[in-house]
Image 1 (spheres, rainbow, N blue to C red):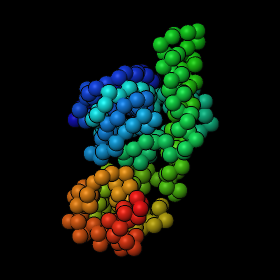
Image 2: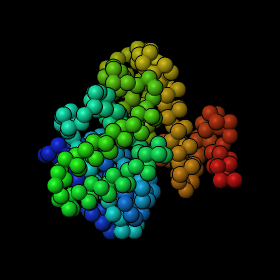
Image 3: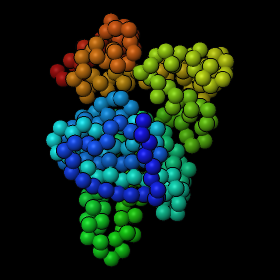
Image 4: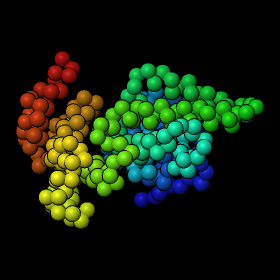
Length: 279
């Protein structure tokens, strides 16, 4: 798979596309993508999300992504790397915290803006960056950089609100690696079996369980179960996928298996859950 690189601290571009020119690919940098106009599908790590104007996406260096465009789409792209985060350009007291938040975003599809009030802030900021870039007025570079800095901090704020409480910039690196491994392989049940993970990380099964609970305040199986439930709920709420399609995607043996799993955790089946959402 192609991996793209950024040879400057940050870059911006904006264009209207009728077809996304790149197949699924990865970056060695962060990319913010804002949709000014148009509709289609975002694919990130083999998961799809319907996008529309006002959506802002964060693509991290670990993510594989692409877009499928349904109607001509006006995109704004901001690309930046670790060098920019650590530089004096970002005037924040806790650069390590900011970098940690961005690196540990949940690698799922969807708009990164969860804080409703921030949604009204972002579009004017994007439009201001574009204006400054096009007009090339006095001090335009300084103005652009200040707006970019604010935009990055707003994104970090929205991510931080939804990080697990027990995960901080002081968290053990191996624990973060285990969390990232689970997120990466949540759709492949055979790879998140305890014996497979203990072999992958070179620690015993018993110690892996104790170590995870110590750092996460819940068992690894409980974490995986809750994570899967959140993924199922998201699809029931925001997609038209049939139950059997969700079952296949998330690695259940069949629809019945998913039904039993979901009902055990939520007290009702997925069909009833979905019907209640739209009743």
